[in-house]
Image (cartoon, rainbow, N blue to C red):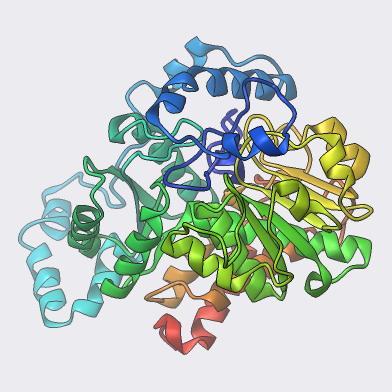
Length: 458
């Protein structure tokens, strides 16, 4: 959970699915993940599944979190906390006199306007844009709830804004847009961009999210970052770095299976490849992704080209044979027989919420390192370890985009915070660790200034 208030809203187990939208990350039937049913459960294929699972995930998360806190969190307490929203806009200057008013507003403000008109770069200095992020969603892939629409997504975006302020000292404005059309989203966000120093895309379903982010990145001169993709991938990679350090392995030698080819799965694949992992097999709801499989959309066709060097085909069980690491960013369950097919002492990152793909009892029996997306288990893979510091570092550097080198720097910084005290139940820092965001920000700022493609000032 990100804010310490009992909500796992920004961790990797958001149930980002493998196809057109975010999966509801749970298997309410409680069935073991056989080849036939597990892949089918990896993501919803219709709105029906979303409707069926709106209530259960919330209840299960609340129950799980309550067990790890001082006492249960009741519905009344939750709704009371949200009354009137969770954010305010406050002035940084006093307005107690006519002089104050003349400086902050008219006539004094006109001088600042004219200066910015003559030199637009002064916007960062004399407005809040240099310290301000827009959190933008269309509500199509919210937590494990799926497509619940923009209004229902707004409480999550407010919570995200709280995290930016708490961990990075950044202003953040939640914006939900009443359209799911990619062209309309891109145009609208681009028109809003002059008010902000960066754009955090949030809870936008795959595969649309890939194209939306790419187009905005090309069009705007401020950082654009889809946290569901890259935040997840960065923290997973940091966790794998430390799992390797703890067990004397190397990223380059791992055979990794990724369950889920949506936003998080695709970005994690790319991040791990950049970090040096060469043997990755990605599995979606129809089995192993490989070049001979039809049909594949453009995103999965590219994945097929980049992954599966041994040319595997078949089911998730076939992919798991001899694998060193499992990363679940889908839903459903693996059973003990499937996990037993992996190499000895595998890394098991089961990130679906509230029910990890591998039940914790099974994971602890077989895995040398076990991570989940849950706040009540050790090694929570939580995006809040990444996005506040990444945006802080990018804005400090005046970067125009967030590059691969900046993301890799973030993975190393997160890993380094936990590196001195590594143990099987501590491969990533706590989401509330105050050292993380400053460390990430510093590393990302340096990486941005050293990377000419970031557009950062030098």
